[in-house]
Length: 153
Image (cartoon, rainbow, N blue to C red; front, top):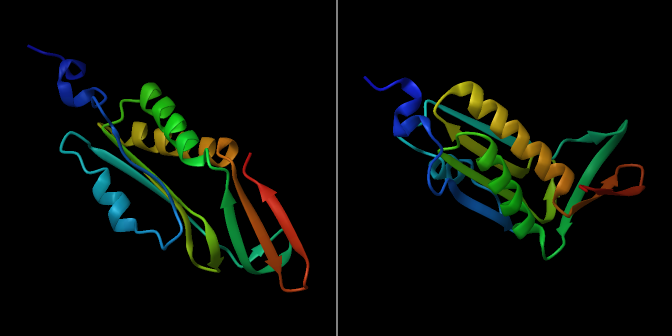
């Protein structure tokens, strides 16, 4: 009799990276969620980063994201690293660039794995590494007229 770990569904998929992108238009939760659907996945973790109305004690009026031309390739490199570390069945990550308003979706990532714990851990590693390593910069404009650039890496 085969053990649980011998089942192909317990292993990482051959090509788990389903969607990677930098977008200058609104992001879709449905698109990302559909991209990570997998019949062998018992857990899917989804993270949604939104533009909040404050930062560092100041009211945010609007912000813009810009990126280096290598940003999408860096997202893929990080996705490959996460897929190599966890039994990922499917993975997706999209980040918005351009001008955004409070409440807009800035980033959406999702990971499906055989079990929920793996999915949570892989999703957290994916978003944390994206925020720290991908060359995407945020330009915030505050209600008091001040501005700030924040580097993601």
